[in-house]
Length: 365
Image (cartoon, rainbow, N blue to C red; front, side, top):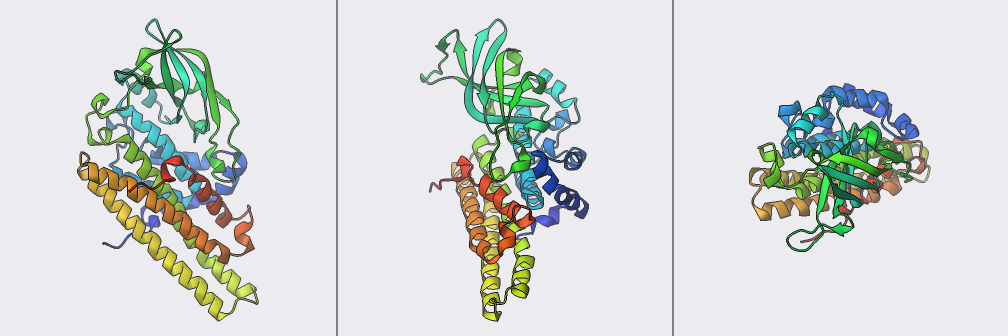
């Protein structure tokens, strides 16, 4: 297994400075700071998965997860917003080309949305009437467009698939047609501004509807044939990995401060702390290396079911190890790590909030 790079290898010092210098203020704002956003626009990070034909970067999955890990190492909330928004931007490979061209004509184009099926789309002349409300749309305050998942209805009757299940389809809406609702009141990921939104009686043309399936891809490229489930799992796991590496980095000064200022911490205690940090770092890096290898293998052979299952498994293992390594080290960090005004506490809160995502909770063999 080759040596794994630190996430900082992909980041310029100026980028990290901008991202971290405004992270605390972003928390106060409840959304990313304008300076952070400008950097995102300059680097086109919201377009990491957007089709190249529309001006997007159309990144490969191995390149994407390393970039997103590095961004989450710089700051968890910023990395998460970029991941969720560019992940929604992946839908550009499935959109009606006329709609996609309109959307991406804006250099600040940004998608946000929720995967929950908590809306309805009722068939009408040439389109649909959409109603519903959705929770937890990360980056919604910066979005130009919102995606929604809807149960398809014909009058009051549910439209069914061939197997008798409810037909569910996604739609892309203009941000101006969506009402935002305050809803993100959690201890971490505060700057993601992951608020809720609702739509009432909105008519949309049928061209606003799309289907997430390799056979329905409008852009013929490997990125849009790769399964959405493993893409989502891998990108979310990369975020937790980046946050965990950030936390272990911050343990170095935290341990030094504790050793210098707490009388009860003797040389033996310092050795215990440093050994714990060394072991946690090694374990985390091993999990990162195995994860990146699994992603690379599946990207090169995306029809291999076993390789895709490996991505799912290693994503969950990486998320688990990220949480456990941080929790092993946290008690050694002192009260500074328990203060909500400190960087190390923000990283701890962000990781444990992001770690609640359902895709990363259970490990299936």
